[in-house]
Image (cartoon, rainbow, N blue to C red; front, side, top):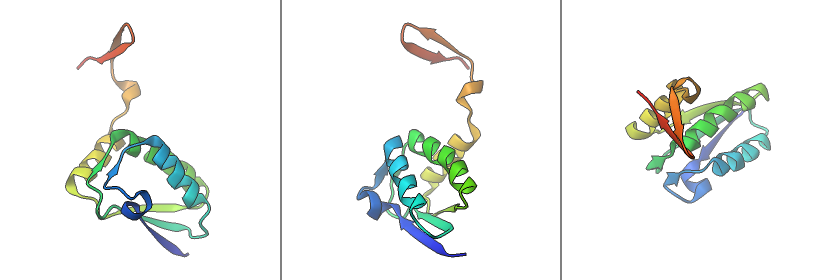
Length: 107
């Protein structure tokens, strides 16, 4: 099995990863790679949005079905905690109410 390291700081030329579209672009790039093991290197990344991780984790399942194995490396504590939060949360199970166009969660 062959490996590829993707340095996210270099790919996105930013220390912040924020959009779902960024993930879609990243997935497209990974699909075109011949390597099966892909290491996402978060060195130099200072912030990652919840939506970025949500999209990445959802697409990871698809990539695995295509024979790609992802690993995450060099995550800061804050970024690792955000990833864990997204992995363990399921917004569909949260009670909520709507007022106009706003959605309010109830705890």
